[in-house]
Image (spheres, rainbow, N blue to C red):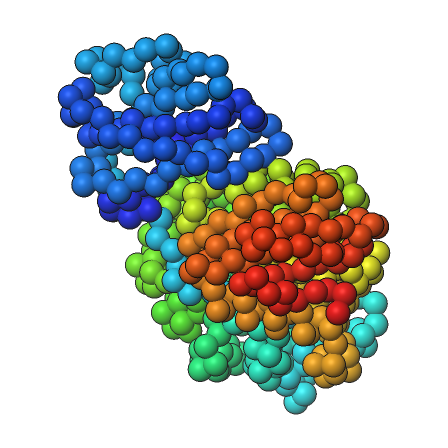
Length: 562
């Protein structure tokens, strides 16, 4: 049975989970065997509660199988009575002699159905850059297009002059923050500052530089042990792209007419009789169900992997593109480079895209929302936050969870520093959670100098290099580098934390055991001091109001109040 709660992790290993109503049962056992022999013999294994969410508990067990044609049933105890749970629901007894009618099953572990971990994502720490506002590296270029003085408040039509050479020049700076991967917003030919309306996918926009500049950026990043991920805008394009211009001129006679979704003989840009991104008539939607469009776009993706050796793609508006397209896309990308990461922009539950046949992960805006609810609006207390984080982890497989791109903000949101009213205590606590939650942390450029900002375009301010040049004297720099060092030293990709609260219910706790080392995160997001008991090390810790503690191996490694 294909299920979010049953997934293979290798050709002979499988994880099975069981979701129950919160506090409904005390024990869960699984009886299992090959589906051809469960009538004669049953192995058993105890399941353990791995997550506890708002309404549900999640029990889990990892099985190593020689025969991977798996059949299983559950045996549950609620403190009063035992029940079997199969496809027939809850029953007092279970007849194995006819179990082939109603056991749960995973019919066979096929290698192609196993989602592998992109190896470098295990220790990745991302830094996202909005290219136009990061750094001007090429001072000899024609600056005639620039209409924003560096540092002034941007508008939707502002051009500040940032470019690819500027990023290359700042690689050592980015690496010094503990980041080892960079995600760039689009760099291809476009009339806008954001480049999400692409008119030529095979050309680097001249505002940003050249193909040579991109090659130099990727090569130098790789020399420094860093990765480069580009932004793929394949849901839509610019109305200035050659294919759409041909359709505007020729209508149905154009060989590109069926590259777009048009209601009529030709596009009408005044009445907008064609599908678009949002309601933007200058961004026609591509028909990715068309094999020619599919070949064109997957060819673009493979081209930049083979020619420039980029390390993966972030997929813009990916939930509006068909599953069928992304399956073809994945096959093509992984054939070109099996370690190229594929990250979807899905703001909501994307579990159907994350079964191993489409994306590797998504931008985890559900984590962003949880962080806002806990640190900004206060709509979640520590208990509610623990439950929310557990529910988020229960959505996906282990491999997906450890590749999720976790973020506090991006080019599409308010700046998180402003969302917490520029409260350094809450800001630093959120960064600690970002780096120690399962998945891959990603910070937006300027986080390290606490750039404030509202919604787009205010979140896309120019990088303040006067402040950045003094970064090593700041507590945020010391915090980010310490967090990155923890992520580098310990393999978080094979571990889940116990996410709960202290006995008072005021302190959020994440407690890991990684390579026999305890790593504990405590966040007191209240205005009162708390004395908590470190259950793993049998010691007490005083945690002050709005203080965050990280304890590694029983020793306090970091306090946000120091």
